[in-house]
Length: 297
Image 1 (cartoon, rainbow, N blue to C red):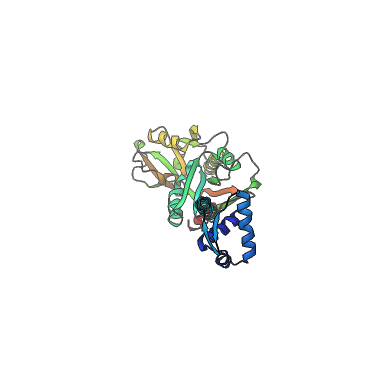
Image 2 (image 1 turned 90 degrees about the vertical axis):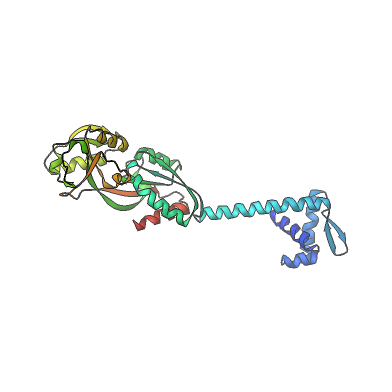
């Protein structure tokens, strides 16, 4: 017994006559009669009490009607849900992000959910290598990250949508009282500061970019601490351990009175940002739509 036969059965139960049911189904009467006979033979029961052309459900027929209606309703709901997920209307969108890009997510997630309120999000944070593993094992579909994406896999396997670059700023303990009346500084003024570096054994390109810019201005940065966690770096700045240089968008997530954020006015060096995904793997409609929302950055 299949879905088609259940639909035939329910049409006969509704019309209480083979002829009218066949008309409602836009088919000939003999094939419909044959399908009903096959169903009754398969089940070993009589589904209808025939009285001339009139057909009334037997007790067995009433049980089958109840189950058939429930099954077809559930099937229709399943088909609708699958199509909704494919169309990006519901389901869960899993996104990864490095900590320094988390600030880019709230506005875009809010914009996305205004359009698709039945889509929920799962967000995983990590470094490039960890997020690449999440991508590879399909724990996430997208990564919001600093570029280049430093994974252990071939870079050719990734598709990348570049987002607007992010200028670097100096983040200084306010207790140092070094620049009380300033909202910007020069690169040379960083030369005498004790600096904290965002760096790990796996991801070094952001750190290298900062060091190279310092060298371009004729000094070697005084790095007193390396740490892979941006959150820990900021905590160390608050404690007065050192200053740091970070992409400006990182600091939009924080309102910390104990730190001073200063633009660097005599350099244009910036951090590149992008969305990364596996280009030869399936990408859900929700993920595609979320990528498109960043066109409005």
